Image 1 (cartoon, rainbow, N blue to C red):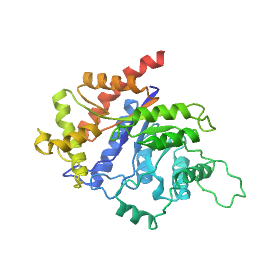
Image 2 (image 1 turned 45 degrees about the vertical axis):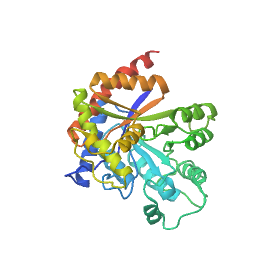
Image 3 (image 1 turned 30 degrees about the horizontal axis):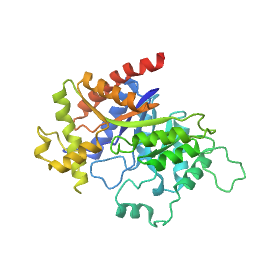
Image 4 (image 1 turned 180 degrees about the vertical axis):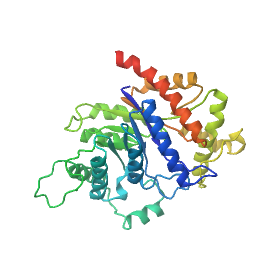
Length: 335
């Protein structure tokens, strides 16, 4: 593992507002920078009562302005919702304002329900143009000739690093074909993680963007001073995910003493499986679980995430995780 990073969905807590969520995101980014995280990514979601990062480029700019050195980016932008030129201009502007600090992860899913996707896109195209849109977007961020009929200004020549995101073999194959870095969403869809990483590494084609494969995996983390406290704090995320699966999305719930009393057993089993690529507990427990994940999948980079209702406890959780990940990073660096 070369580095470790953090994904934040800017969760809106029960009893709080979107303004609270965005303030919490900035505080978390500043703490992540101090703790040694390489990147701080935000994700595009729409029509979600518990997520405040819908206008992702705006939040990225807000976070970049409040930090100094940490890379800030999208994990990711759902490209089918947007014209490639618009994204090139937005991220070209961010890269111009914060040079050397902006990442652009691209996803193929809508990041919402289909009714909202139609409201975003106005006209739903029947064909899948994602590969062509990725190429078009990368071209806008590259060194286009001055006589090109359409150029992204700002954007032209910024060479913002583009990542392909995914939770299936499709993204792995596309990232390998284009010679781009790849991030797998194993924090909520771990089923195909091993096969996707194998596919990406085996079929990677070196490119002007990347000479060798660079694979990132994601894992959920909930760390606290004791295993019991972490289990209590983690109940918020379990409840939120279960309610989403049951068609009742809402703000991030307050933690509960017994999540099994709140969620039917079959649904809780589904949620636990979806969130199984994770580490939770005390510092020692989290370090052991993260070490096992790194040994098993051998990611070039690990991105962690976690939904905790109390913002101070959330910061503390990621600080504990950073201490563990620094220790796990040292043997690899020494080798």
